Image 1 (cartoon, chains in turn cyan, green):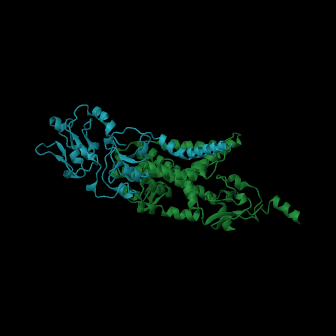
Image 2: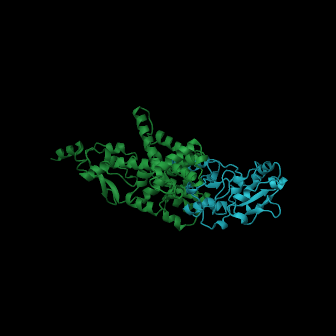
Image 3: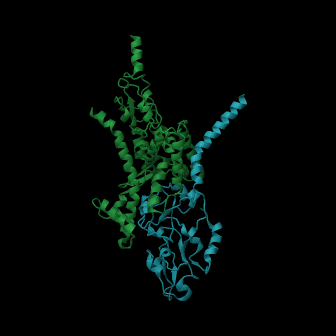
Length: 218
Length: 326
């Protein structure tokens, strides 16, 4: 009889704990983890560089998105697991204008107020096997003319008027990605360690998909 | 006389405040859309729908502001975290979850929760009853449940233990600390509502949070009355704890009470005003004051509830006892 009441107590305890934990796993269940393309999910200006530290600090209030003048800040919704409700920028849709409103409004330390030239959202990488001027002396220069940081971030290479080359001053705001007219998007924002020059050529998107399995952390 | 009259109509004021907060949550994303159009100087490039939004928001805000792109930044955010005229205000639950997830204390963020914490310590669970955007929907949902009950359907009949929500709060803190994210944000209805309305209007559409919120509505409708607020909501648990020794509370005047028990029926939190049992769960919503036919219930300043005062003097139980003793 004593053992029976013990088992009953145990079942009740497990049931109560299960009930109280249910809202948390239910909400997590509704946001399954999905493989996101890293160059379409770049961090915000002033964000903590470590992805884990950023997720710890961000509490999903969405204020950064609500003050963004070009509305470039989007939020992970039902595709992100842990990262649900945290912000990201998709430069292929809209690039950041580096106004700094999101850093100022963020109540936590997820986004810190820092000078624009210290912002580190990544770096622009140009695929020299797909960019018009690099492939066949095309005339473009859209990325160079739109860059908010001017010739400290991107400029034409010497002697080749329309061939863009990214410099060290690039903070990865992604306006060049937004404005690039080439459909295969030879320019994109990548981690600084991946370099500013690539030669993927035709079909780099497929290659990219294959890489994403290993490269992605969130 | 006049103070009694005001108290009788506070419930209407509460509905007004709730609807105002909710409509602000709907209005703010539209204002943000208007801001982005204004900042881009792109009126001629907008679609007819966007032009309508831009025109109507311009008409709404023109008397108050000069430059929409910057001036409208004065009021931003949701009830989870907002910035109002330069003052940042956050939900205390956000701070608790953030400290647990981050494992360090970030003072500027703690300060943003100061105003709600002080208000809660004075006024009790007033956020739950008067501000929370989810409360509006939950109360309407409860009215629906009442109609269903009237139609003879056995809905929301069960009772659980109100202490469950404190366990949910503790569980959330543990889960936040283990997983390294503020896990309350994904399951706290006011946070979900504010965010999802913004997603739906300014971004592409509702996210997963709305599904979760609909599930809680179903839970309230089918299982227990106002079940999420009473048994599950971790924010409610935190506000209950903070407001345990609140200054403002409702008391029953035993000389006026006639034991009609309308207060017990109207109380969506399942409290027992008829037996002076308000406890820390009461959110000062004033529904019982509004419904009381003899004005026996009113606000008082006291940090403790009155002990049970016995049957109301206007009721037949008390009269019977009196006649027996005579």
